[in-house]
Length: 208
Image (cartoon, rainbow, N blue to C red; front, side):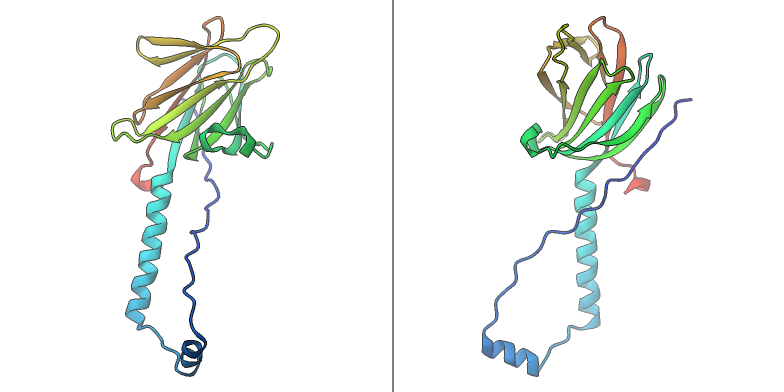
């Protein structure tokens, strides 16, 4: 059976709120007569903050599943969040997430704008995958497939985006497709040999 490995991204802090300025007289009054909110109101405020943080995490966090459908290992590297794929925002770092053997699967908790580099064991076949939010209830995701290979020998990547839909991604080009939850895309090499399959899923209740 295919093995699955997962990781959580580091939680990000809540955005700061503006501070309302107070006049010197008001400040003196507050210092002399400090007000303490009732315990019930204090607890309600804490619950609101917790619910807001949870809702934000649920909205932004998804799960990307990558299957190695080829005949050699695939290394998956996390490149960070690149807004609209803008490489000028990339700090040049990579984190090795997993080495996926043929027939195995890796699952990654991801946020919108996250990008991953995927390389074959011999480093000759390479692509980049990026996830974005799509304003469509039925197809809430957009996945961008980048063919990063610019070697002397042309290395187009074949993308199977639907049951009967295929297209070629030329070197140093990319293609973006909208996707429904669980829809699987397949990537093949120039000889139409299987390399990987990728899909995006909403989190289950036990993962929230």
